[in-house]
Image 1 (spheres, rainbow, N blue to C red):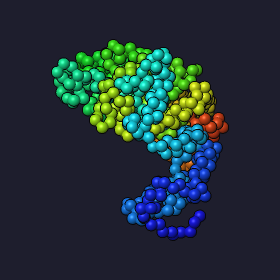
Image 2: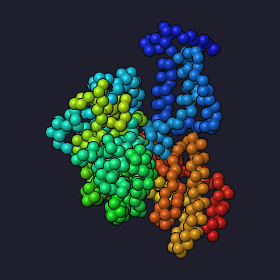
Image 3: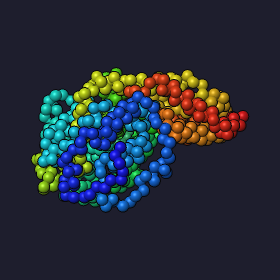
Image 4: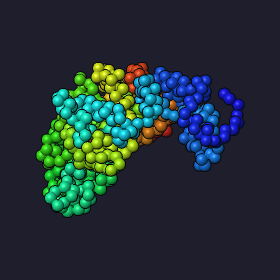
Length: 547
Ligand SMILES: *Cc1c(COP(=O)(O)O)cnc(C)c1O
């Protein structure tokens, strides 16, 4: 460590230098880089470090609102950041961090990210991204092939064609879903005779022209909240996302969706799109995609599949049948930053028909000229980084067979964990893992017996009372587990059929980190059991409620 305080001064020269001269190898920056990569390796092998400092305390390190007048030495700045930022970051790559879709990354991603940032290509236009644009189109082509599996001639013809696109690369599933529904809207309300289309005339004029009262989007009640944002932005309105109930396995009830589509149509409301979820965020289940494709064909509407999280499972030849029907979608969302192990900021929406994106094409004079291959003319976002390079790297370095192993192991680990939960008399599995996501809760054996008896006796008031207390218990156990920092699971609220749709708080686990061992899973249950046993007050109340 160097002596402090030191004073740096601003000069043209020093400002020039920070863009040109790299720090000496023994600098703090390189030490930090070294420490970081060591730390990252540590994240992979060690458990989550305790987050001793509460959020309120950490906020105090980020209180200053004035931009410093004078510059700071890079070494001084980075040293401080190591203490305040890195040390208190969430160790998402830890193998016992199994609560979210963000997990470990391959080691090569870090140095490659540096290359990407260093080149600083802007994918909005060819003039700033010559080699990156074809690379991104290739990545979209590879993913398109994974989903739709067209012939070689299809890719030869369309992959690099200026007026076509096999998909759009974007920052994540949210933008991908918005893009898909934007296309669906523009496609439905397209130019027609004198009417210039919704893009020019706006939604109200478009509805008047086509004679519809309103538009609707049908999706399972487990649909992702990004669809709500899309409906809001597109002027369709959140309440016109019609939420369809799911069956006991969290899959959308297609009969109910058909009934709803008929009701809407009779009321003059045009069904604009049907969205199937391939891997719901909360339970990981997949909607019956072939039936949804049939329904979309029947109502002549756009069929979008949200596979932001689950789409990567297509890499597994063993389990890809679970997503059968996805190839009939008009558009498919897949996030590379979830199960493809790419860092955040890598979403994609793929189009079955390479002409589909014409519905949103935008041309401008200084860039995005007609006939140019500028990707910006067919994307919602403007300036974009070369994230596709990292997807390209992972697809090549890991390969189909590598992903097959990773995905199969995750799915099988989830099945193993479900088995542990079912074998333990003090836990209740709430949703079976279809992919590598499952939900469960801690319910002591006697309480489970009391619940079963109350259900058999149709005593729903008692069931509700017990579930209310269990919800409190699950919440406090999950919070304490997170604060202790040894392991992390997330929590959500579901309405299981078994409890007549009473709201139940559950632990939610996503098993994507390849370094999560079976022992860690056993330890997670043991830790939760221990934490629950310390909640004497709640356990007493539970006991009383069971009598
Ligand atoms: C994660 C997710 C999204 C949103 O993706 P972001 O990358 O967070 O924007 C959308 N749909 C589903 C099913 C998801 O799991």
